[in-house]
Length: 327
Image (cartoon, rainbow, N blue to C red; front, side):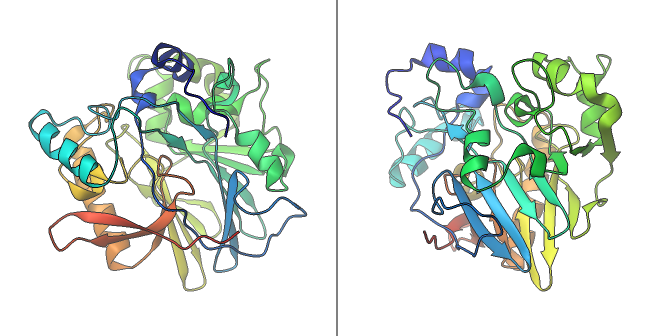
């Protein structure tokens, strides 16, 4: 990506629509398993996408870009009584909060019958030199086009997950796709009585309400992909579980929080978690499950290329172990 040190923090706030999107993830070694492509792309793995196999499914993690350097604390670790612990943990792991960056990682899963996009990035926010909104560019690098996507699943209604739904003229980018979202989160974001309708929702979700299929936790998104109840970050946030043969992968969305602080401190919450007690319980449950089952995972804001495993730490809490990456 281009050098973005000339983008000011003020511009970044404007571009990203709020301090919550400025948070950060630091550098983690390159990761992930490579696999044979199901597309005709001649661009090597790593050019804005990370392709791997989960059973017979092809999973392509796509970079929507990353923020300029911004403030990690307190947004990505908001507990006031834990700030010194958080600072030490970051320092011990070679992360400078003032220089850390936040990543955005939509995912396409090709099951052989369906091509499902999970979340849509920041879309037209990629203006004024911002290093974000790169989903379509990197989708093309991966040998895919918007018309290939037959299903778009939205984990929750935050702007960095829905703004890529439409183009600059307000038309749907994924015009052939079925839109799917959890009913609780959809209702919260689209009904003023339950939650303020943000500009991102007003432009990207509300005009297409009739095209959305609303589901409950545990419902099938497409065959082989099931929604997972993961509330707290937003009222009805849903993650997703891929299952192909004996292989599984958890797509956390934002349910996992920060890849370092949320794992090391399971009682931690984010400054933009809607229900802090609920999200702490959600993360503890999800982390325990994927660690116990040694399940591959990806998180929307994990450091690129954003795939790995979670294991329990001897000192308490959990840690992310990056999967091996191959070009």
